[in-house]
Length: 387
Ligand code: NAD
Ligand code: MG
View 1 (cartoon, rainbow, N blue to C red):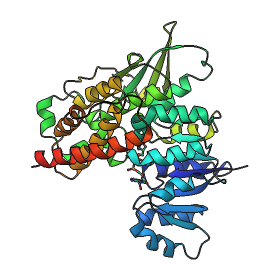
View 2 (view 1 turned 180 degrees about the vertical axis):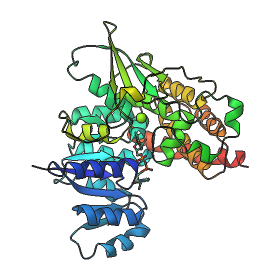
View 3 (view 1 turned 90 degrees about the horizontal axis):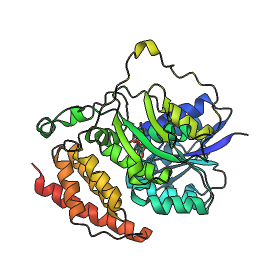
View 4 (view 1 turned 45 degrees about the vertical axis):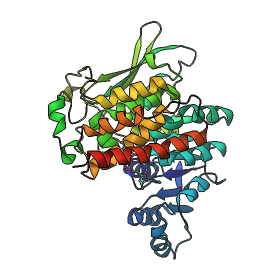
């Protein structure tokens, strides 16, 4: 029996690698649904190659292009954000991989959980925005959230067979990104091209900028808090430039378990899809001789202010992580559009958090409102900072 997979964001970095994993295990998986925002050409090619039941293009202006290109096939074509949230409930889907980027992952993930679909979760922003609602909903519908993010997959792998043992703390490893060890003065003048050059991973633009600013690690701390039911004080970050140890769990006896391997997202994607099995795969193997030293450093949160902002938002809880995420999405886009500088991203986020009055235990509607309001605020601040 093949498992039928819905890939939300199939044209992105994670989405494409997930399709590689599916191709490599075609006896076990088929692509049932593929979705993309605006990259019609890649979506069409994927549909012609994988022959899914349904494709959805988020940008309704591209509907006709996709529809016509697939007219000679029996692939069903839909368009729009609502359609993405609707298709995940289809009876023929066995697992949903959330590989779309940003806040856009929230409503489709909620719809999939309510439909009882197991979630392979790459879209960390969903847990940052609404971790409490998502984890409660998943428990209520007996849905598993299988982490795809490499750090969280590592922790999940370390926890196998340890369900009755309490976690003392976890260490999320961070490569440090392209600006590891730099000071604030240096960061002021870094360019988009520099920020987009990640030393160890090739990823979508948004997460690559988040990795350079260390916001990614902040978002991952919040993601870990919800996935593994931890308090803020149990989550630590350690810079590990080689990206070989993907994260670690320290138990109450003091023992630490680490999960290792070459940086290759196909591994955590595959593990989420095949859990608890580890089918044979030919990904490149780690060679100890090529890595005689694995090193560890602290992060300077006075330089990488986004990490401190995320930690503060996590500690405040309520709507603050949602506001943090919205401000960050706008700030990253403004930086990618050459509208603001690299360190100004932190200024935008800090100003948005300052201007937000917290509400604890927010309902989904409150979070949606917070997201919308914060985007307006952040856009205004970006304009006022613009050069
Ligand atoms: P990407 O930008 O390469 O791809 C994003 C995908 O989502 C594309 O298919 C795009 O069409 C779709 N999309 C974009 N905006 C959308 C919207 N508004 N509505 C619907 N679909 C939309 O991103 P990525 O690097 O693959 O990352 C995807 C998610 O996985 C992110 O949340 C990221 O944090 C997480 N993640 C990525 C990596 C990685 O190695 N790339 C690692 C860990 C976690
Ligand atoms: Mg990660």
